[in-house]
Image (cartoon, rainbow, N blue to C red; front, side, top):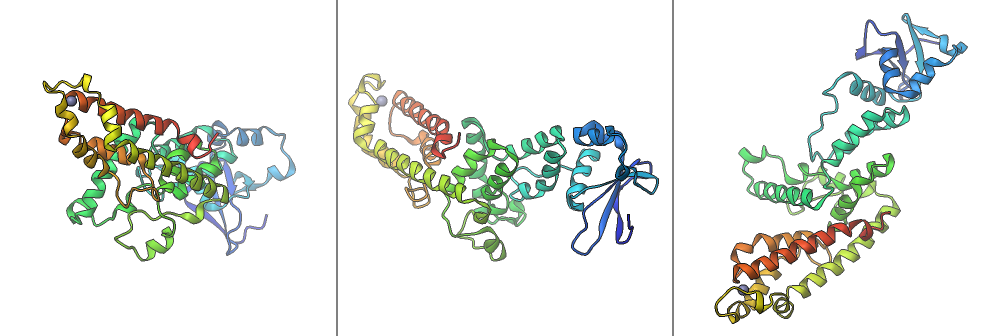
Length: 345
Ligand SMILES: [Zn+2]
């Protein structure tokens, strides 16, 4: 092969390597050579194992600097990501909730899939899954964390926030959805779609990152979505909007009166709790604001806000317990329905 415009990778050109892997040429014509070990590649990848098991075809007899040479069509960036992950246990460190994590992990994931490095592909998928809750319990935790983080960021206290704004510290759903689709990681989808469905369209990530606006909580990489994704998000938004409308009706005095059966009430004067139903209803209705309405529906969040006020409900402990149970049941039903809400199989 012509050895013009060749560079050795800074880190992964190992002196005792017996396998040279040559990247595709970059735009400037430069190819990068990595020097690693056949045994490591064969151990991790059935594709490489198969390559070495073949009777030596003339092309496979190429040598470079004393090592067997393999030419691939992958970019140097992709190869570096794959080999770094195989050789350096710390290479895959991404911060949980890092909004750029799906982009950062894409080169390694692409080659992990291509070369069937299954353990690595699973590890990468697991890293991203940590940012997108899989169960209601996980959602409750991450919602509590998000709420505290939003509060801290709103305080603009540089000691607590390091000057970083909320949007730069929470996972971004557009890139997550694109990653999930490209690499078949369906676990990311339900809550990433939910997050999209409750976010106003129109504030794009790139535009926002160039000129942040403190009134926008969460810009999204809308351009990462396919037409099919948009249809699912729009469908989900309609369903969730209906859920929010149903919740508003549920939190009305008549419906609460029916729920809090006087026979279960522990107050000596059982009419006492019923007297406060209107005040209770007003308190629950406060969960619906302009950022949580039929247009930007977040029924899970609205129910959680209601639940968070439970110490102030003007009813007896037994009635409060009935209401708490009902709120958790409704959240569980919403959570179980998410796949259907977004037309996922
Ligand atoms: Zn009561």
